[in-house]
Length: 326
Ligand code: TXA
Ligand code: MG
Image (cartoon, rainbow, N blue to C red; front, side, top):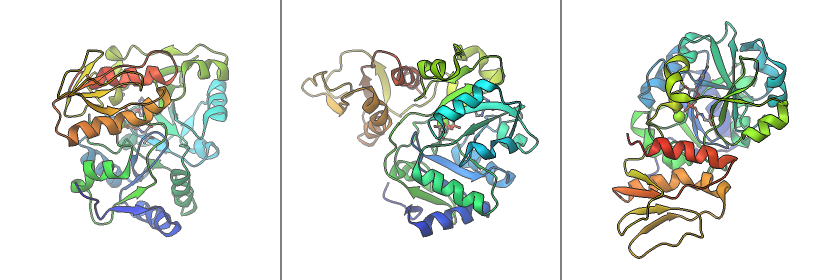
C-alpha cells in the first residue's frame, strides 16, 4: 500500500498534464472538498466505461458531471426551475449536486439511461483549476464518482485513492494530490425536476440551508423503495462500508476500534480511531478513521453517532449504511 507512481502534487504543469490526459481518454482522480473523485471526459464513452470497470460499479448507476462554473450548465440540462437557480447561486461552488432533465449532450453512458443528469461545481482550488484547464482545452465536463471501489468507503486523501484503485489504473492515468478533503462526506444530492427540491442524499448543504435559499420545504426521499426508480447507488442499503464491522451506539470493548466526539472517554484496551471536537470535524475525519480500522486489521469498529441536524444527518445516513456491512 505504498505511494504509487500515479500520484502527483498539484503543480501547474501537473494540472495541465491532467487536463490533457483526460481529453485523451484517460482517468484522473482529483480532490474535491467532499471526497476524491475519479474523473473522465464526460463525452468520451470509452473513458466513462473505464470508470465503471475501475470502480467495479454497475453500469446503470449514473455519474455526476463536474463543471467549473454554473454558466456552462445550460449545455447539459433543460428546464431549470427557479428554486434550482437559487440553490446554484447560493451554494456553488460547493458540496451540492443538482439533478435536472438532461440535454442531448448527456448520453446514456453517464446517466445510466435515465432522462436526468447530475451536475456539481465543486469548491476546491485543485478541482476548479483542473475543470478550467479542461474547459480551456475544449472539454465540456468531467464525469466523476467517488474514487473508491463500489460499495466501499469514499477516499478523502490521495493515498486512500491510491490504496483503493492503483491496481486497476493504467500508465497514463493520474491521481492529483490536493491534501485531505475538508468536508469529508459526499455532496447533498437534490432532485430539481419537481415542483420542490427533493433531497436524494443528505450532505454538507442541509435542509435548513435549502429552505432558506429557496423558500421551499425540501421533500425527503424514503430511499429504499426508490432505489430501482432513481438508481442512486449511494442510497443502496449497504454502502460506504469498510471491511471492519461497524457497530453503532454500543459501549466499545477491548480490541474494538472507537470513533466518537472528544468528550467520550476511551476505556482501556479500546482503540480510539478519531476524537473530533465537533460534527464538522466528525464528518471530515470519519472515512479516514474507518480506513485506519481496516489498515490495523480490526474486526469491529464502534461509532457513537453525533446528534442534531445539519451535517450530522449526513453522518448518520452514511453510518447507517456502513453498519449494514458489505
Ligand atoms: O461529493 C460528491 O458528490 C462526490 C464528489 C467526487 O463530487 N461524488 C460522488 O459520486 O459521491 P458518486 O457517483 O459516488 O455518488 C453520486 C450519487 C450516486 O449514488 C448516483 O447514483 C447519484 O449520485 N446520481 C448521479 N446522477 C444521478 C441522477 N441523474 N439521478 C439520480 N441520482 C443520480
Ligand atoms: Mg460513491
